[in-house]
Image (tube, rainbow, N blue to C red; front, side, top):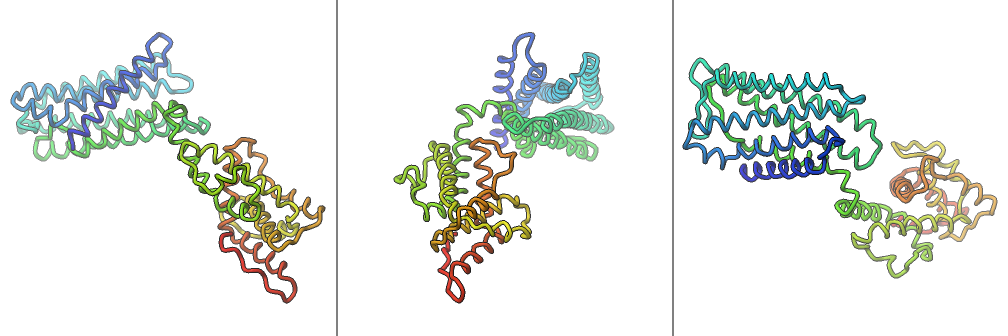
Amino acid sequence: MTDLLSFLGAAFFLVFGVHRLTITRGSRADPAQRYVSGFALCMGPALLLNSPTVTGGLAADPALDTAVMFVSHSLKLSGLAFLALVAYALKSPAAGRTALRRQARLAGAALAASLLLFLAAQPHTRGDELSVPDGHRWALAAFSALFALYGAWCLLVLARELAGHAARTAPGLLRTGLRLMMLAAAFGAAWTAWALDDVLGDLRAGHQGVGEDMVSSLLGAITALLATGGATATLWGGPLGAPVRWLRAYRRYRALEPLWSALHRELPQIALDPSAAERRPGLRRAEFALYRRVIEIRDGHLALRPYFDADVDRWTAGAAEDGRPRQAVLEAATIAAALENKRAGRRHSAQGARTAGAAPQPPAAVAATVAAETAWLLEVTAAFTGSPAVADVRRRVRRAAAGPGGTAAAPDPRT
């Protein structure tokens, strides 16, 4: 299982790195993209060299095994340095050459210090463990701590810049990608910090494992997946994003069903396609079905205008709703009252209908788009099915329909 996770993470990093490097060639390429490619092309081989299969195959030659371990460590450190460069490339305004040179010198110093500490530790491998002689444990512990602390600093710098960009970015695939990259940075920080576990072992016993353990391999694979998803998020709007859009549309189609069904029972003519009104759409037709459902709900709303009750606004004025928009509750209550009036055959005057119909309008911020209208109707549906104020309006209208001393019609359990 550890081998599988290591190979999976390495494959994601290598494929992604080569792909990004190929499409960002040229003098005008975004520097951040080149640095991301450098990170991926460092981390992929590092994961591969640390896999149990590779470390086990090198166990017969301790000198080569030790050298490969240091190469893997240096690749990881270089990859983290590339992430810091990504953060500098994302700065607004962009960081100057002096800042980039300073970061490159810091990375070089970290690599040089790692080499010196590694040599001072005088390590040797035995099986799947790296050991040092007595009196050299401090060097091995410092070697591991330098990696963890420098890596955490690089990821902190990157996360800070990604958070700033995500906050300034409008909702959409780009912001989703930035948030995924922030998650990748968080898991990467955990992956890097896991090296501190080696520090304690170095000081106590003077040895540490050569290959990736289960936790480290899992964190590496998750980091690779999140980083790849974040960097390619803008591609999801095309064919790659179709299944996600279909599923989202299908869920919204189903979420609107309580309101649509209540309208359709009293006004079956609102169904644009009567033969499909009671059928569940397939995922591939969910977007069209959702569009049709929104139109049908609005047609039902218009058809109920003669039954709108002018008292609904007054009845709901003092209602306390936790988190529900006032206008959504008002529209849901107006529809609920109109449905009760229609069942009882109680039409209101034209003036009363106009007065009632003018009240529950969507907020001005709701744009004339299917997505915005759907979001608004989802709020109305939630109030229609779960608002105490709407339930109270239903009871009032049923009592009024029963008349003095009369008995109200049995309420429809589906509304």
